[in-house]
Image (cartoon, rainbow, N blue to C red; front, side, top):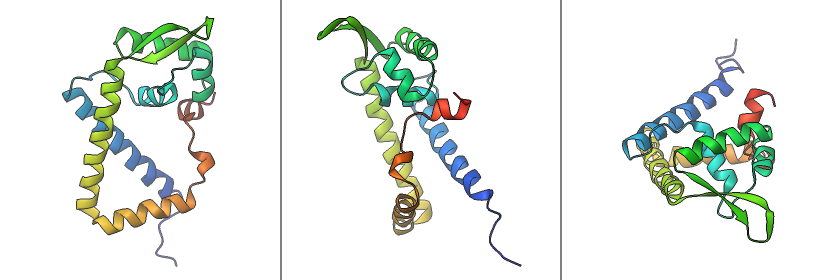
Length: 156
């Protein structure tokens, strides 16, 4: 009889680790002036990027409908993280861009993730953490690094 855990445990452990990191991130973001954000909002900020995007492009990147992307944009605009403006190259298009508040949230997120990683390194040992990260790079295809997790999780 094998002493290995059952196969289904691996994805659950990875999911629980991800969930723990994201929950810790959002708790700290709330303390630092960014309450009310949800995990999907981070995917939205990443999908918008420094150049901005349209609601259609955002929906496509996230794997959700244009309407779902529009609702999320509306929410984040009300919260002061995004704004809409006419595309200077095509006045028919509305671009969605991060505001200073959105950029601040991304900068704080990066700092918090660095702190969380340091905590993991302290718990596991820096060498073991680096080895785990390298091992994950070996088994996770670069093609799977997409931002469409909200759509993938919800079945869109």
